[in-house]
Structures are given as C-alpha cells and as structure tokens.
Image (cartoon, rainbow, N blue to C red):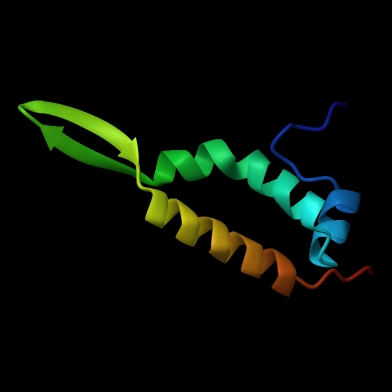
Length: 77
C-alpha cells in the first residue's frame, strides 16, 4: 500500500524535531502550497480584484510551524 504524499515520514519528522535545518525546510516545502493558500489576501486595483499571498502572514505561519515542530515530543510506545 502506497503512503499518501501529504504524510511526513517518521525519520524526517524525527530529524526535524532534533533541529536538522534541512529537514525543517523540507517540511516547510511540503506545506508550502497550503500555507500560500491560507495566506491569500484580496486586493482591489482600478476596479480589478486580485488575490495575492501576504508575505507577512506567510512568514508568521511558517515561524509558528517551525516553533511547533521544535516543541513536538516524539514518544515511542
């Protein structure tokens, strides 16, 4: 049975929790499209409506995700 693409492998998560920067960046990359989607803001210009990614909001969401990754405790039963 194939693992869905949106699931994070255990070894990747374990390395990210221990502070491996490359693994944290890979996890941020996996969630990048979702973060872009939730950080969109509507902008109106000359009667036209555009949707753009708010860079400040995106940075805040990424920072919160990194802090939660580093605070995560892995327990093995």
